Image 1 (cartoon, rainbow, N blue to C red):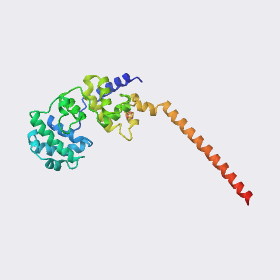
Image 2 (cartoon, rainbow, N blue to C red):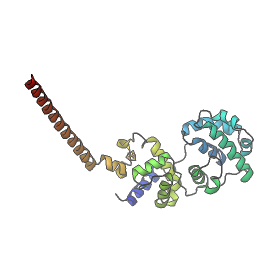
Image 3 (cartoon, protein in one colour):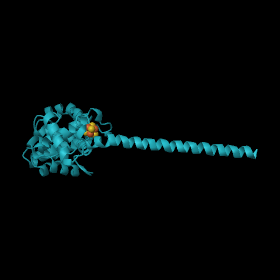
Image 4 (cartoon, rainbow, N blue to C red):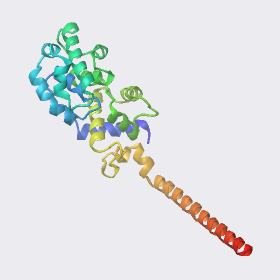
Length: 253
Ligand code: SF4
């Protein structure tokens, strides 16, 4: 299947079945989303949603978070991955929002990346979710699923995946496509055992095509038969060698 066709099927399927896919992180405003996304690095959304309500309640504004110490924040996020770094990042981020950005979350991706704890992925999430910018944040799910489906070719880094997706996806679908890929990766196209048998998009997935189609199954069977033949040959040779050894021992006696 041509890449352009895969893209067409991908957009058709998900815009029909998940037209307004959204982040599973809970938040009430851009500042809260920024906190949640910074915390979510290398951690599950479920865990983040358990710790953020208390932070949002006790530190409702950039000013209140900027006045806190990392040690204070650590107590709220000790169950999250990398709590030491993340507590420093949250306080640093809030201070910069107050000092440089008048307490507002900036819409610009390069300005967002100046904030402590905010890398390209986080900046893209904020830009696309909050400001509806045509940006594509590539996390581990997006990276894996885009490669498996065949939306990208030889994309070895998140940036390479981002560039190809941005180039080929229609601009107005980009902010949804990010969530389509994440949710599909989270619930169906799992990292270790993708649920290909129940996957509704297997018919245009490159990974499925390579591993489950008739030709692929035939190839796998041929490899299996060749292996069995080689094993039988080895077994026969071993038996002959054993017999010859036995005869030579008998002769010596
Ligand atoms: S068919 Fe399998 S590899 Fe392809 S998208 Fe579905 S779950 Fe992932």
